[in-house]
Length: 208
Ligand code: MD3
Ligand code: FE
Image (tube, rainbow, N blue to C red):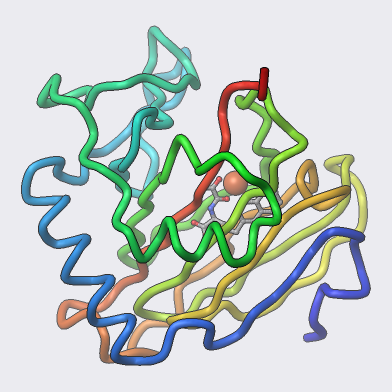
């Protein structure tokens, strides 16, 4: 297993960016936000098949999917109908420090993986702005993450993402296929019940 740093232009890996105490602070922010805006089970376009990953969002826009509406961004939680809670200051700070992109993120998707949840190989292409990077934060159990190239058939590399790690996907990496193959149960004590939380920060609309 090798780092993907030299594999795709625009991929940056910052292992252990958040120390244990920052991870605990971030988790406390997420507990507050998810009390108002709970994790729900999204469904696939057309088939209506449930995803194994549970989701919620923070920020002005959230990524959602369901059978009839497909993949999209919207301002409200699909179950509660309420606006998504704000993105925590420490997450906006992270964006300012690492994204090299002036406007703040519009969407912070929060994915919650309880084994055997996984995320198949896909591209993040529902945004209008591909000039902005995607910034990801991992919390809780480690996962086996896979990243390839701009085509589904491109060769892939696997790497472990652990609690506190940050990944920045800019440049060519912004449109790379990627997925989460497996959660490594018991690899972290951060979440009492186990599992993995991932935050992905994105710009959605084009800069004017
Ligand atoms: C590579 N999330 O929400 S984060 C997603 O761990 C998503 O929950 C995964 O893929 C997760 O869409 C991966 C790392 C990541 C995020 C966005 C990317 C890698 C990426 C965009 C382009 C290329
Ligand atoms: Fe993705």
